[in-house]
Image 1: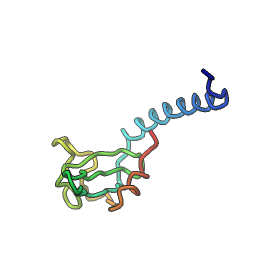
Image 2: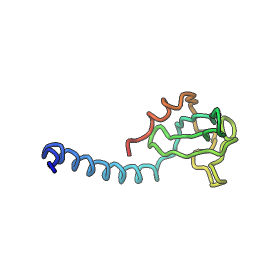
Image 3: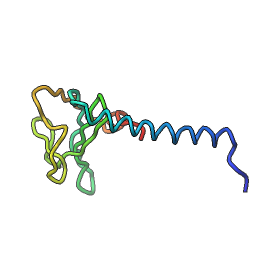
Image 4: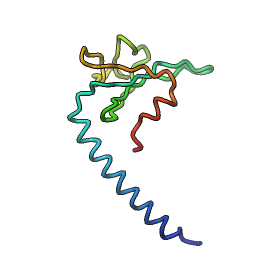
Length: 110
């Protein structure tokens, strides 16, 4: 069997290292972030089976959480009754993103 091109293999190795560094930076930054600007995509009904829970993501650090099925807008709680990090606060701006694909583009690539 032929080996992968050496330049591609080297680039892939570099990518793995970059993803590890990004993950470490992300963890550090998310722990200190106040999450003042958040995007939310609402609950979405699916034609044949239930729906997709609402999601929120911090626009500064990429922290993301899934809301319970009834979360959104003026009310937010994390799925499975966990304490919500991205819940509503007076100092927090929440941007509504109705299109799921647009919301998913806000995610960090790791």
